[in-house]
Image 1 (tube, rainbow, N blue to C red):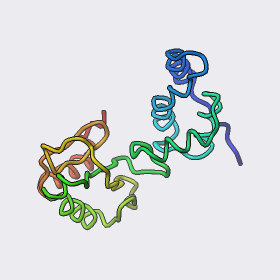
Image 2: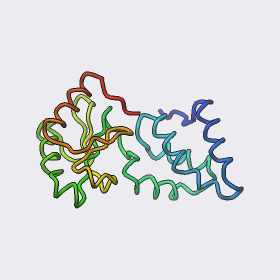
Image 3: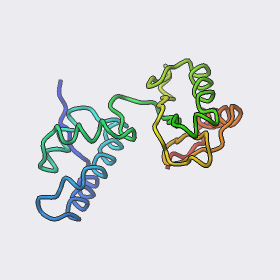
Image 4: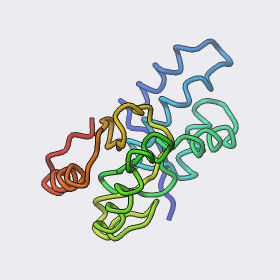
Length: 169
């Protein structure tokens, strides 16, 4: 059973407004913001039919959408939990203990990198540099950074998520 992929009218209007920012023939420039809208509207991840739909809207080849969507860690290629914990694992964060943070999350939530908890609440996503090197180790949760992490701070964040008290932006 196949269901038709289509943006809600208000989202489609927003997409057309974004596309209109760019000169004719340059609609591919709208790809990143349109993918964000698609991911938000279609369940928090981008499956192939959704990416094909975006390609059609932008009059580009589907492979052009796949290349971009799979390159950036902000786009999810499979279903994710309500809370996606993106933990930075590059140099400064590693030196300051991000591997310890990752190990703690893996153990506490009983998941591996890229996995989602059985209850669908959390997904762990190790990330490349998130640009907060001076505040390492850090994780991104929604649109917000949580910096200078400790095991205690991570436990507090997880508890607040479970209580529904975390704003994802």
